[in-house]
Length: 516
View (cartoon, one colour):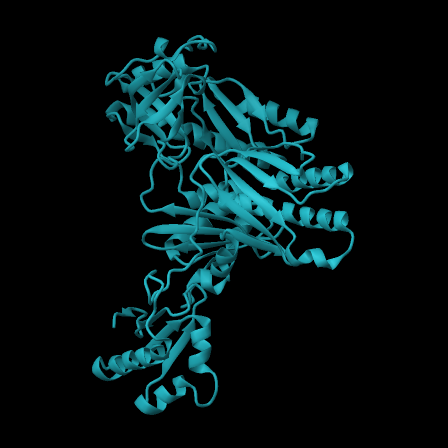
């Protein structure tokens, strides 16, 4: 499948848009200075123990205490705790966990107050980012992810991704990793490692071990709470998880970020470095590649998908609800059952896309159009499982009920991606009342006159909604030509799809906005 990655870099955030077959499939934002991302390792302090929940609240520096359940502490917690005591000692001269004697695994049926006490330091990893009013969800079963391998300190197990079907390849990878793996480390072999040679895997394994062993130096000086190992930035992490040889292009509007990505791609596949391109256009990058328009069409309450059919997407605190409607398509044929099957199958494709795009997690309930034939319900169920197979997020799909209701659980590790598609009127400011529209053109004329005559601007760029742009530029007697003959200066008019109807902004020759 051909894929393109469009990356918009601004001072406040990096927005990453993944297109598959020129259709928006994923959208993620990485805010500058963002903390508590999945994978970050912190030195925390136990604030409160809750025996009734068999859990503890940990201070990791977030405004809300983070949550650690007993079952998330991992079987090697005693060994991890011993490592923390040794590494925190100023007299420590150990630089490898292979020299630390392993402790027995903790009891699966044990209690949290048997292992933790208030004020105790603890090494934890963010398993789920803060969502709404909840703090981060933590684990003490530390893992460090690479592209091909996941390193598990204090574990000796070697696991292989279930998506690698070949038994022969699984055995080859297990033997290969067993021969190069240091003592006291476990490894999870990811799907992309299939077919990889020992040199590439050994290089990555050494890098992950080296990254982990930096904790010896950091823990010696660290005070709880503090960040010990930060996950790589969201852009590189996304590339690590989704990059494949079918990528056509990665387009970035920032030179430094483009260089970083090119170096990373080059380390994976040297001949693919050229797919990283720096965008130099004057038009906003998302506007140029049609991402803004797709966002507006995909994140609303109502989502159209095929021949008049549409979805209604509702979000609640407990779960998400998606209603499938045939709309005007019901008129296309007289066979109601056949029509319902076609709409439901097409809805599966759009629903799978919406789950990835919005990163919807938790419980999702889908109300399909009623079908009375059991074989048709099975077809919809099978198609949903097939189309969801490409979703990297862990999920579970329950069979379609006789009422055509489907339940999906999808792992939620970070807040859902939300985009407000409803526009607030720039004229009425949401009050519902606007100034007379006949004065709109006069308002623009007055500001053009002020900018060109009073401010003596040599060049003026007016950005407006496409409908307004058409009004100002179409025809020989257009307003744009009238400005030229009146002021002998050209006012360029640029249509911006993301603007609301009556929104407009003036820019000078340096692309700096003129506040009028």
